Image (tube, rainbow, N blue to C red; front, side):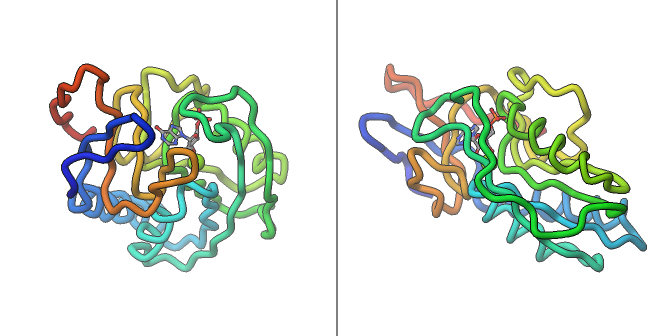
Length: 192
Ligand code: IMP
Ligand code: MG
């Protein structure tokens, strides 16, 4: 894991290693495999951010399952939410009567996941659950449970493993967090 990554003049420091992520993804998949035994869910990934998490998670799933994707946009190229969620790509699958598992990279304000849930629920699925790799619990304002959470993290901007900064650095194997501007390196936080 590289010591630090500098983008424009923002400095990012290591937060979750590829190994930590891999282990947690396996645990999440094991729980889903157990909870959905005998069922055939559709996993719906939210593009772009969830694509790497989605690919790793789905390969640990042993259920009879299908995949589809929705594409939302809320951040543009900024580090904070614009407060507006737009649907850029709709579903191609039949959701009615099916068990749906929505796959997110990170839940921040909660706007995107709420918007998603509304779109999917309109089609009368048998059930809808949400799995997110990261949850910024202190800022997320959602009025429904987030069923599967990889790591609860502080409300800081993170990059890598699918998560971008102005569309870049999604290809990093591990997750980095924005370092405070005074040059100090924050301590590692325990996983949730
Ligand atoms: P929310 O609508 O505020 O919950 O934001 C959700 C979406 O914003 C996520 O699916 C990400 O694509 C993006 N996002 C939120 N926080 C971060 C972050 O720390 N780094 C990169 N993208 C983020
Ligand atoms: Mg996303």
